[in-house]
Each structure stands twice: as C-alpha cells, then as structure tokens.
Image (cartoon, rainbow, N blue to C red; front, side):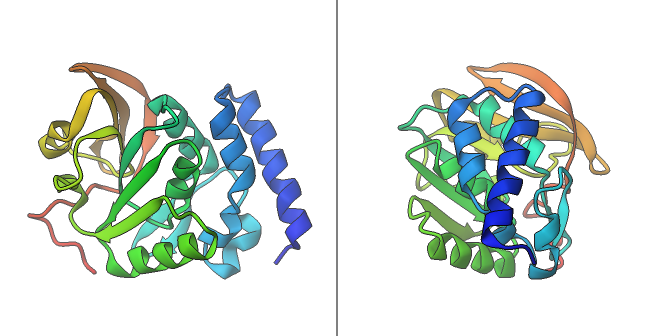
Length: 214
C-alpha cells in the first residue's frame, strides 16, 4: 500500500485529469480532492483506487470509476442545502463525495454486508451527514421524501423507477442509467423533461421482484 502522502498526490493527479475531461464544478472537484478513495476499496486494491476504472468491492458489485462519479454528481447541479437520495451505496465513496456538495445524503443499499461496511467507513471518516439503510433502492425512501436530487448507481431496465420519480421534489433532478446487460444511457429527469446524457456501464438495478443473491 502507498503512503498517506502518496495518496494525496494521486488524488491531486486524479482531479487534474477530471478537469481535463471537462468537470468544472468547483465543489465536486474539491470533494474529489478530499475524499480518500483508497479507504473505500478492498485493502488489496488500495493502490489501484485512483485509476479511472471500476473496481470490484464484493457481492458482485463495483465502485464506479472516479470519472463517472464526478460526472454524475456534477450533473445533479446540487445546491448547498440539497437533500439527496442515492440508490446503490456500494462502497460508500460516491455518498462521501456527495456529502461534501449538499446538506444531507440518504443512501440505500440492497446488500447488507456492503451497507454495513460503507456505514463503518463513513463514520470513521466523519461523514456524518450521510445515512445508510438496507433496502430495495428502486422503492426509494418515501418516509424521507421529497428529495431535491436522486442519483441511481445501477442500470434500470427501461425507465427510472416510478417510485423514485414520485419522491423527487418540484424542480428536483433525477439521474439514472437506463439499458440492458450492464450497458445503456445515463438519463437526467427534471420537471418531466428527460435528457440523454452519455453512454454508461453499470450493474443492473435489482428490484423487489428479482433475487439479489445476498
């Protein structure tokens, strides 16, 4: 494993690459420079944490590449006082970055072991405005709705889940990959208007009527 100072330099290099790719949101870039991505991957993969590619984190899931994390959070166009629902906690890394850009994050993870691990790391690092719960992310969190923004980190089959759209505040933004076989298009929904942003690859969004294997 690298040293703490080496990881700081790798984060700075990562942020430089993100700028070159067109990420201009200052809060997103500052968050990416702050959050220690190496803490959110398996220990044996820590030295690969700042490569711009997904890494396996267990339970058949991955941590998204830094580029897609930054792109999605920037595309939400968050206000400092936004409340955000994240579907698919995974490692907890994106939730940590989100937490530096908004007021609060509620993250829902279907796999209990991933949710527990993410919760532990987030608490250890002091990201106290993130709550992690175990559940079917496609159902959202109606008890805490509405949300100013919703970010879905898994591929919906045809359209974003209706339950999530119903939990979006007026003027809010929902981001969701849509497609099949791990590949599709990232769409942004705001005030009923749907934009197709870019091609993406994500693990499938597992809904209540599908086995989760966990």
